[in-house]
Length: 347
Image 1 (spheres, rainbow, N blue to C red):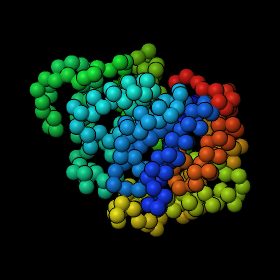
Image 2: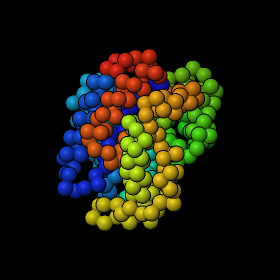
Image 3: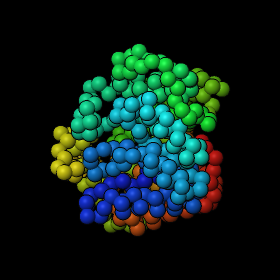
Image 4: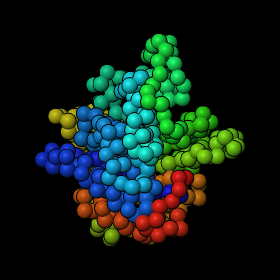
């Protein structure tokens, strides 16, 4: 099992400055690259102060310039917000500018607040995503593409420049049956159980594994990436402090993910959670390195190819860097057999 870091793009205080947030993310990526993480992950979100990255492909190029070998994974680019005729060319350029280190994760969008304010209501995003994905694949693999669909109608055109090599596309899917069907279509998979239980994780991996087995040689190179909020804690009191910070963060996350979307001047208002702090602690992986190894063991045994360590819930930059360092030294070698600072091949 390989490992990626979800770079922390939480912006709780405007006084801190977006420039400092992105410098912090670059510093996290440079450290992850030096320590041998396989990948770093970045999001796409607009108009809100969590997961704050409105320019993922631009930032991927910046990260590639600052690092040497770590892959750069979008988790995820929201296709319904883009015109595929423009976006396909941007993807090709980003792939070239990152020296083919781009791993293009795509999805349909999760937060109704931003989607609706950008003119893409959630009740139509699935259909538009499906067509957008088909258009994107055609533009990246064929020349003189024309289209006559519900959301795209255009005469023959060719995206320039042409891709240097095949660009891996990763589908963001949570439903186990959806994972099965997307894998059968030849896509890599990004998923997360969020607050789901262990059985949901097993079902998600099971959907992927079943599809790969049915595909035989054609599915051999496909990979499954699974994201969980995880952070190293040094003691029970340190764990409690970090769990409380995560609980506060998720009061904002819930507001825009499943809640009413109360946002003022770009800042998401925290809402009381139905879940208690104790339940938050149970659902997140915030623990000592030894406990982390025990918690991640079932993921590796189930067949997860890449674990995305999501540290995005508001810890300080120093604490985040210390977590990345400690995780690489005390946790990763138990799953890769490599010491910190030694990179591996793609899963």
